[in-house]
Length: 556
Image (cartoon, rainbow, N blue to C red; front, side, top):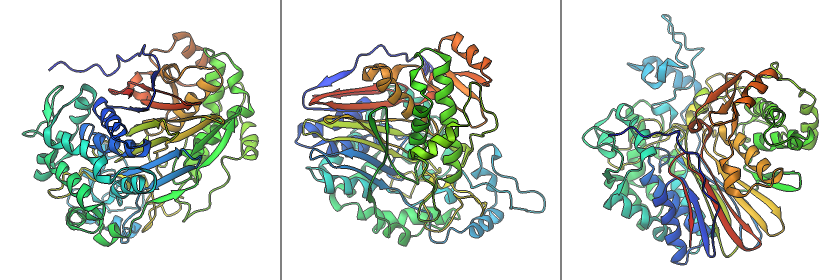
């Protein structure tokens, strides 16, 4: 098999247009699933669920029923809203219980890739332990199934069963695996240690190769039951029992009661204006405030006044983002457990802007609530329809196939979002029963005019808010078409304090940033996240996707 070149994508595509509806996501078959539902009379919300469910099957390396789902949307009647469907820690998951479980496990180092965060010494001193990245303690209550159900019931035209049918067909009938996903799938060969996990996602112990037809019948059966019986079967029925049994058999604390008590939330977004455009994000426990704070600081220091290809533009935007990450990683957590300052306010931005000069500020750290989250991957999809609905929908297990646990015979791989908790009781994001972890997932929405709305997002751990700021600036400051706004080379701050730029960036830019005091790294495009966007501009529907995976924007 020829090894796929994941860094060759330097798109020359134009923005896609369609008269009736448009779907943008990271896998063509999933996009077609969404379009098929639009053709059958569904609206953008029905198509979003159909696309997300199909991604669970055709891109299972990034998303699944064992994860969480979030949405930002504008409805045809003008409502701007958000849905947050993410579960918390089990009721028995205290810091003390988790530490005790780690101490008593035969090989707890298996829960810490490269032993990162695992510092137990000969005296079994667990005071410095990090939260396990893999295994049962990283599993939080999954929000996906009830989030999908709530989306179609509250906002859609069709039934949940109608929207899940394309995913069921792919799972049962099979589909050819595309190249980026095949590459990512190889990690599962060592991640899955149980027979039922390997049977669910591997073929005779191996990940599928490029173009090979793959079926996921166990996952397909779970999707079929959810389609017929509703999401409760995953939270209160025998699927719930298999999820709880899997976690408990590995030493974790998740119970059927934890699952049954979960409900998604419809909440108000948070927002700011950037040079006349109104940007909407999710409120904590997500990274949304980081994106908004960075945009406010950037506007305060006129970062967007500098030429597009200048080192000054990157410097000032990056310094604004570094401050926003420092604040976000210090304060953002579940707001029911900690008070969070007004990070998205203009007054906050004015004070923070005082720390930005003509050279890099090395007195401000990036701050990291969970170092493993930096390059975690996910899926994002955006949909617009001719009724006026636009939605950004994001669905993830956190890191690839998640915790490494697959629930019994369900084909459901369980997320490791709980890895973002801290076992330090003084950390704002420390573990508590029922508490929701810090979440990287941030769908976004923008209003460029009264009848000009866009839904968008950028994938990839801590790249997400950094990508949001860059995409918005590209459109607002530099008047780029949608596809060009996504394609333009990006930069990102890394958790160790370096400033990374894409390998396809003009080489002079990197050297000029070094002269401004930045520790610059040139990295491949695959580390700067994929992106999607759709727009309804006065009734004209358009969309774009940046193919860091196998993305497509398509409509009818």
